[in-house]
Every structure is written in structure tokens, then in C-alpha cells.
Image 1 (cartoon, rainbow, N blue to C red):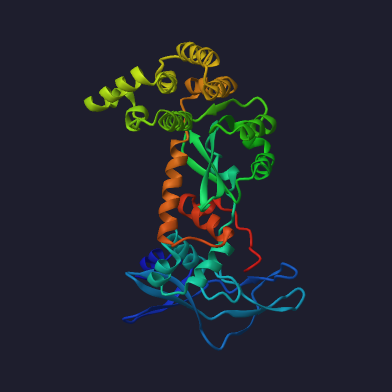
Image 2 (cartoon, rainbow, N blue to C red):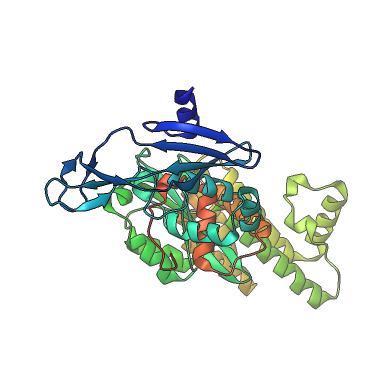
Length: 406
């Protein structure tokens, strides 16, 4: 029976003296089987027991059917046979003066991963402040990339940004191929923060990177080219089409202001092959009466054809035709759009080499929004980054770095 209890509670290697079960708690009394300890000063292994603590000390260890399980220990004091120093034995998984075992702390963090501080605290019977301090102490603000990528010889990174609070943005770094994993949440969206992250990558991680998927930010593209020379850049298809829809809608609004005629929005923004009969009629009328808006819409649909092409060569022909057409346009915005497409030509066509996007990264952002709503927002950046990493990354990949508040 004791062997079964030890396995259920994760106390292998312990001696269990007795177990007391009450309605609101379970008390387990245990100790170490060997009467020996190693001196913390000189390292000598000694078996000379000096004395034993007079009172038992309780440590929160785990929960069983919602009832807390406390581990009671009575540490012995040894006298070193070498330097004669008297010291107290240390129990595995229990830090000196700690009120909880490491097993309990890991269980608290698992409960906190997908809940708010208040919800997890009420369920575990502790205060939200305890969870906050535990998060800062046990969870680092950066992922151990060596451990996270050790089973992946080649990876493609995805870089995007998400809102921390309002217009205050943070950068998200993910692995989008061959496995999907969150790798980092950078505390700002400043270019210097991204550059610092890329410069801090170890040589073994750099050698694994085969491509980087980003949105249409020229500063990011230059930073990646400078810090990761020779690594292809893939323009995220979602952001390319999103940018196209934004430009089409802007042209629609300008045309409305000039002509004083209302132009429906959805026939221009929806995929042409998904239009209803009424929307198709409206689109045909727009093409007939508003040539400039129709030109913007044509470019947007051609970009969709670029990603639907069966090969890179076919996509290159379509994209080159679009770039040539926009350079000869009479609208300045179309000309500037064409110049943007020309600068990003290789990055757009690189999609056909890797077939990757930042779809997983956008999914991470959706879950982050959910966690923010559950927690009613965050005011501390360090707590926010650690809380979000905890929801996506195994605790073993989060190298523990003590925080100054702990």
C-alpha cells in the first residue's frame, strides 16, 4: 500500500510513516531512508546524526480530488566527520524554508497556464500574489531555444506582432515548419528589440534556420537580411492579401468622395469566386463605371492567383505582369503599390519554395487575446510575457532566471 501511495504522490525513494485523511486535507508523514548526508562545506559524506528537529514541518505537496495533500517532514542534523560542521539535511524537491514542494509549485503553474490568477488561486486555495511571485520565480521570460529545437534539424521561423495593450505592441516569434511552436515573445515591437533577439541566437540555432516568414515591414526585412545573411525571406500570404484589400478599400473610399456615389464594399473585398449573384452584378457595375477601382481590384485578384499558381515559374509570370501593369498606371497609389511588389518580389515567390505562412502565429495571437480577456488585462510586461509563454511552452523549456521581485 505504501508503495502505491508513493507512486501516486510522486514520493519514490521516501519512507512513509503514516497518512491522516480529513475532510479538508490529507497529511502524509515521511522521511528519507538513508541515515547519511553530504556536508555543504567540504562535501564529505557523513552518517553521524547530531540530533533531530523537535517538531514536524508541513509542506504543501499536491492535491487529491480537490483536497490539499501536505507532506510532513522532520529533518535531521548531521555533524560532518571532516570539518565537524553541524548542518541540516536537505530533502529532494524541497527548498530551504519553502512552504511548498517543487511538485506543488509545478502543479500550481499547470493550473495557472490557462486560467486567470484569481481563478487559479481560488481553485488551489492560495492567493493571487502567491501565483504571481511563483510565476516570476519559476518561469523565465525567454524560451531555451536549444531545448525547444533539439529534435528539429531544420526550421522556418515566423515573426509577427500582437497587441499587448491598445497600440502597445509586442513581437511574437514562432516555428512554423516542420513543427509549430512558440519560441519567444519580445517585450516591445521596436526594431532594436528584434535585432537584439536575432543577434542573441546561438550558432547551432542559426544553422537550423532555413527561412523566415514575416509581413510586409521593410525594416524587419532589412534586419533579417543583415542578422541572418543568406536566409530566404518569405512574405506571409495572409498579410500580402490583407494589404491588397486595404488598398482596394482605400481606393473605393476615395472614389466615393470624388463621384458622390456609394460603392458597395464586399463585392470588392470578397474573393471573386465566392460572390453571390447580387454581389457579382454589383462588381460588374463597378468595373463598368469606375475603371480606377476596377484596376485595384484586378491587381488584388492577380495576387490571389500568384498564391494559387501550381509552380514558382507560373507565379513569377503572373507577378511580373502585375508589376509591369501597375508601373504604367495613372494612379500614383497603384504605382507605389507596384514598387512595393517589386521590392518584395523574391519574398512573395519564396512561398512556392517553402509553402509556409504565419497562420499558426495568428492562431497564437487569438489564444493570447482569449487569455487576456480571461485575466482582465495585464499591467506588468514581465508577468504578461511569462504568463503567455506558460500557456504554450513546456515548463522544462523555460530556463528559470530569478526575478528581482522574488
